Image (tube, rainbow, N blue to C red):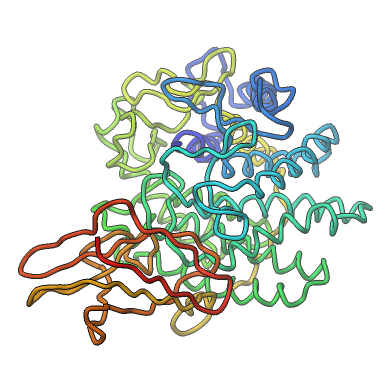
Length: 513
């Protein structure tokens, strides 16, 4: 499912509303008036999409957030871990700011997420990578159709929301957080500390590789997780999370292009894109820490790097790329999509109250030529983004997550140390000049890239061997290929499948087919 408008709404409203510019052409003369009418409409629209009692969430189990009630063109009647976690981060913040009516729903969401963690799915089980599954059916069963998986930002975002809630209720008298929330959070923290350095599909669900957004959210998760683990009395886990947070922060800096003065949205993907992408601005928005001032290491919104990146991304959408940007003066805000090369529905735009219907409903998309609402109606995260922007404009800020004063480690970044040795052995007879290689759906297996496939050793011919270090407790797929004499030949279908052990080593023995 695309995140273009769901998250771009946050960018649009945070940049446009916060500037208090009168850009609306509806019957609203001031931004204050727009906020006054759209705020309640957004809150109602959001709550209507949460099961079991939401007006538009029929069939959704308790605490399940539907992405949209739309069931065709597109069908978004599913629950995404990313969506629901960010929606509930907003609701947790509003609860902490005084809306006590939200607590029962937050508790229901926490319980629902605990149940979803245990649902086996195409990404694996709770102990073999299944926490990276991006979406589920709204009755809390697995979605099994093909999809861009895994998406490794979900577990971290869920942990951030749960930790924020647990910290607040603990500070206000709750004594059972260790029994009711910590077990769920620890599963996600252990997943993030194990897999943060592994390839992932990005938040647009299109690109598999390294994602600036995901790395930043994983770093934040590990920082908050270390403090929470300490509060829960688990010093060993706290040390692990702290160590991996330092590694993640170090790696986060490598996305910055000093020559071009913007953050690369993705790396190691094999795609030919500029790297300019609104998800880098969204990263700064969701990395915001009110105690971190304008520090650049975590790309705080007012840092020199975040501002330079914002300038580059917004300028990439100026000109005639989008019809509704025609005639916009230099220096004024423009409508933006996900990235300038985007062709998904060919009409992703940032929200502008100019195109909000009079009833306050917020869809997923707005046509880039006309501004008419399009695609999934009543998108939950659209409502959450509007409410987040309105809260910031009114001076309401989230709690600090520990970003102040952080500095990346000196020297080369250290990769995650969580790997196990996996031996691959395949019996294959070859002709002169041919060699056997392996590739698969993990970064260590070259992400199905034949050009980057790993060569096996023929010292025990006709048995070819190689030992690779892979993440533990991970379900994966792979194939052998033979290269030589100008040809590349893949094994026949189906793909080989395996699961790495939690520790120790494993051996996979195969014959060429």
